[in-house]
Image (cartoon, rainbow, N blue to C red; front, side, top):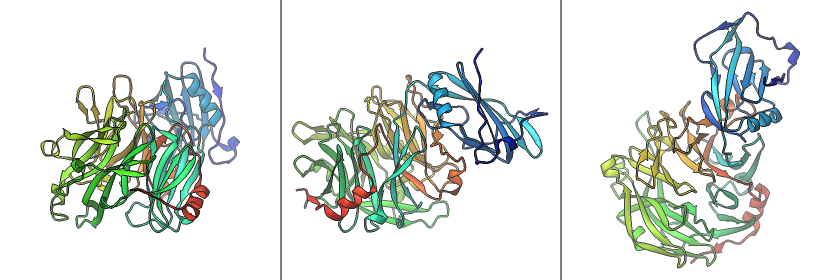
Length: 482
């Protein structure tokens, strides 16, 4: 018989002895009212504890039972699992199923709810996640930070803070090869530039030449780390008159360019710099031989915004010579599909391309219909990911280095604040029900009035912090590209 470890733990630093134990328990058929919703999902064996609360409960008992190990916690409305015991349990049950049983004291009665399951995947998730904490708007950045969270525990640190850099906007932080050794983000405004990190060496770059309409905006690294591909955009924000939509952002011009970090040059092609076509959101293929991007014919804006629909396209890239290919292929036709594509991202193993689809436009974060799609690059089939998507915006996704996990920002729930959700893709290519980023206090999202913008996974931590970025901003001269 398995040995059950009984752990008495109180989530709010109160006296454990004061927490009542279940007696005269009544079994009910409805699901346990837990928040966040962690029921019946697949989790990595190296994730932090999935702490949750039970709505209206003043006491509870939660048991988590596996094939080899088990864990019981008590709490006054919150189930908070001890980190070390949790880690041991998940390591022991790697590849197995955990059964979670909730018994809660609500309105004077002890209620026992039907059990739910946690499948512990045999593959880990990358250990670090970065995100930009920002108010859910467009022009507010008086308190803007890029933070890094250790997914194996609850440690979080600030890696860039605009209060240390002249209150400038900071955006589009991006990793190469899901590694903290290769990253960049844009620090806008006077004294700013693109902050490039290669193995801890920080450079400040002006990624623009005289042929470009703007400095670099949305981008992605080449696997070699020598190149990155970017869009350059003239971006216009506009507020909707309709009550069900809040904000629209669109391009009046947008082109593509590749930055060569070794030779400080921008590489352009007339095929992706056409004035009558908008090109944006470029991303390299996993082998670095192609660039995926979104393309739309220019329409009269803002009057015809609902006719602005982007197709998914591909063009070759030759890293040996640093040159673009000579033809553009369309992989997903917006006119035929009656939608608009954003944010293509190739899985590191080269099997999949994930992108988002909205009804129209290029700023889907306020389009509640926005969903994630998964293109199988071997056979061309597209999975609309019904197990993953919600009735709110699901977008800004990032792959884990082993291609078995991805993270995305979702506005499910309140419809206002984006939160990071994780989903598992098994060997058959099936995506599993996502779960939100665990927090030490299950009520964290109730009192954190910030969106977790552009979540990015990384296998290792970034080798700098906010003080280093301040030093670069104040002391380092920006390098000019030609």
